[in-house]
Each structure stands twice: as C-alpha cells, then as structure tokens.
Image (cartoon, rainbow, N blue to C red):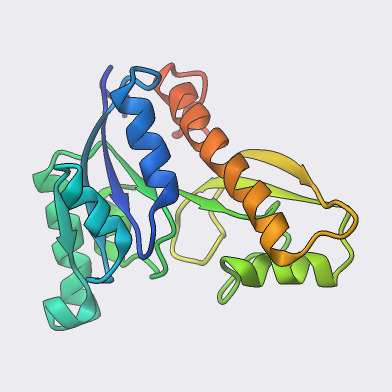
Length: 205
C-alpha cells in the first residue's frame, strides 16, 4: 500500500528519544515532508515524553502497568496509532517487543534503528552500550547503524539501510557510542526521505 505524499509519523521511545528529536527537527525545517503526530512511551519518566510535551507534541504513556497487561497495552498502542492517523511508526530507542496487534495493524510500516551492522550484535538484550561493549570486546574494525523493518523478533526484520562507522584505536564505549549515535541521527531522516520519495519501497524489501 502506497504512502500518502506527506505521511504521518508516530514514534515509540523508552528513554531520551534522540532519533525522534532529529526526525521531528527535519520535519519542522522542511528537510522531510512528513508530519510527526505522536510519541508513545512505556516509561512515564522518559525524557522523550517530557521533550514532546515541552514542544507541544502529543505524548502518551502506555505500558503493561498502565493498561493492565501486555496484551491490553498492545491493543492500546495499536488503537492510539490509528487514532493519530500514523502512516509510519518509528522506533527511537523503544525497549519493548511490539505485540501482535500493533505489528499486524502496521505491517511493513514499522522501522527500528540498531547501533550495529545487523545481523552482528543483535538480538534480545543487545541494546545501547551493551552493543558497543560487545563490538569493542570482539576487536571489530568497524561497526555502524542498521535501519530495519520490525517483526516479532528482536532486531530481526528485513534491513532497509546500513551505514558504517570505523572503530578507532583507543575507542571507549562512550566515544564509539557518540559517533554511532551521530550516524543514526543522520541516517534515519535520510532513509525516511528515500521512503517518501519511493526510492525505497517497504513492500518490496
């Protein structure tokens, strides 16, 4: 199913939502012809929610605790995404596996970013600095960023795009994380732009 000319983007974020902020900035300054419509977090204390509220951006806290169960949270997320008219769902550091209702309602329309070159250093428990620690421990010469479609497994869906980041001599987890995060914030808006221009067809990946 083709996306509209100016698609609506919803975000799921658990913590800072730095990639969300980069994408919203690209929408607001005209680099990206899309409309950010809502951010949903499973963490009521996330700075992503605080940032959204400060920037007059709809923000919802939905979790298994607030909804009563993981299944109810899944249903509430799917309903909220539909209510806000989301055409694309962007995961920006979302730490929960999505449920079947959300995945089914937005099949091939949910994107995630992972701070490594999948399939390396992916899977359950591999997130944030744990990924960078594993990259350094393995003595890798390079790492990078992967944007992929989301399915029912961690870091498993079809790869949409990747960008490489060199591991420099003397790198620490912190220095490597900074460069990878900068690459994420560069790549995510670029990939969305390519999706909107139909250079990337999510139905054919």
